[in-house]
Structure formats: structure tokens, C-alpha cells
Length: 212
Image (tube, rainbow, N blue to C red):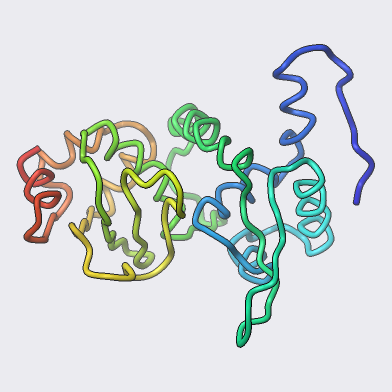
């Protein structure tokens, strides 16, 4: 565990940065908002982080009360990391950073890594703004499938891969629409009205999104 560094300033922003200002910390939070993760899964979805740095950040986050580590029951028996309530409280911070950073994305560079579930937080912002309500939404991108939970304040916000049950709606934004949503150039409401997002499903949530 690295020694605790501090700005030594009596300021709430400085105290917050004492805990989350190191590189990779907030991106680890982004991954854990999708639920408990094994170390190997975190490393796979944080391309560019070294094993030593990741291990150090996880220890620091556990010390600072942002994460906990527990062992899964048999037959899994692996250790997983998950957010505490304090760690989950960083969701609006990540959402604000994502919204602020959207215009800086520009065109995707050849060296840029991408994962389908990295679109989950921008999509959740858009769904909240559209007043989508509660439900399970499955999303298909060129990069793969993921799903998001709306209106559930307790469990994971999203998950990689197909929805664990029949979703209340399925969304398939085209590539151009997805990039525009990520950059903040287009709202989800405008994308739905402009037919840049294919919506399927028979339930009330799907009907509401089609009629947005």
C-alpha cells in the first residue's frame, strides 16, 4: 500500500482529491459501478494499467473506504472487489466528468481502446434526462452487448454482455449516433426522435422510448 499523500488543505475538494485524485482510481470506480469484479477482470477492462499500479490503487481504495474485498462462496472461491456506499457516491462525480469531457473526445484515434460497457454511464445520463423510468435495457453496439438497470439504487448500474433476463427494452444506436451521444453533440431524446436508435420490445419502457 502506498503512503497516504495529502494536499494538506482544509478544503473539501482537496480532501476528496486525496482519495480519488490518483491516476486510474476513478476509472476503477467506473468499472465497479457494474458490480463486483475479480482482479483479472478489472485488469482486462483497464487497458494500460500495470498489475502493480492496479494492486496498489485497490489497496488504497480499500483503506480509504471506497471498496471492499470479499471471497465468493464455492465453487467460485475467488476474491472480488466491490464499491462501498461511499464509493457508489462517486457516481455523480463520474457523470459530471463524463459530461464535461465529452467535447474533448473528438474522433476515435487508432490507439484508443474501447469497451461496449464504457457507453453505459453516458447512456444512463441520457435515459434519465428522457424520463425513462425503471427497467432493464439491453444495448447493442458494434463493440458488443451490455445492459443497464434504470431506477435501481442498490445493485449494479450496468453489466457486460446480454441482459440476465428478458429486457424491458432493447436499444441499438448506429455508430454515428453513439459517437455523437458520447461527445455530447446529441441528446438521447433527439437521437430517438431522429431514428438514430433502433428500439425494440413490447413493454411500457420500450413503448415510452419509441414515443419519446
